Image (tube, rainbow, N blue to C red):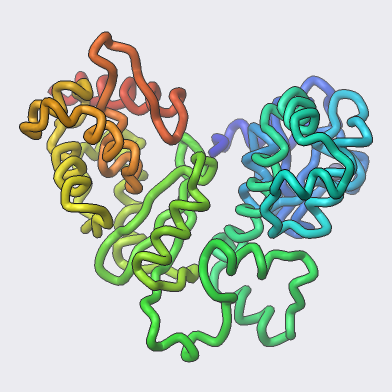
Length: 355
Ligand SMILES: [Zn+2]
């Protein structure tokens, strides 16, 4: 999320085509669905139609596609023909999952592609394709049910690939809901936080999943959830989704230390045990993996405990960020180390002002 004051500043930079802001932000234009560099020569959008992002990956995950005029993915110098070929291939079929053989077909060496993409965009080609694919799937969730209905009514075709992208990740293609009356429906919502965009999935009673949208492995995680519950996921609002959004707001303000939104834990009995133990770690405190294993009475199952922590699907709410290495190092985090550090510091600070 980018702060209001920053939005004004970035918007001014956009109006001025200020080159100082190259690489500082990208702007997504809601009316056209593209994202641009600050210096894009195209007609400038109105402020209310702009969404600002710090990285291209975030803009892709927020369902925007790269602008053809300013080519936000080719700054600062022109991209190689190899990168251009691959970006075009993704746009042709955004729902595709890339395999080694696909690179061979395009006469492209996958390791060269990986290296060039990483150097240019800070993400590998596979990560780029994934961000674009997930972004398309998320579009439904961001735009809400009304959009699906409108598209169905006008016989929307999947030329943009977004219907395919959606169904591959979220379940059967969005369609008239009554056809699926026999299926469990899970509802998904999009939550904007100071640490980035999150996706939340619930039924009418409880929250099943809460993750940062750029988390590694999120795509598989959502698929697993869908297969385990035999559910279809559609964009909607539920009491747990409204509750978690309000609670996250308060948490990030530092006024909430304990989440009350009901949770549905989907895992083995051992995993559930580990997750419940995580919830019992008080706000603002950290614990090592070894201590955590001891609390559980499973000193020898240290690795299994660490794996169960890693399998947590309810970021922040089940505070796996409160588990650090015995030597004081932060250890790993699915949402990235920077976020883990931020969360630990945030809690320490607000715990200090509280007591
Ligand atoms: Zn542009």
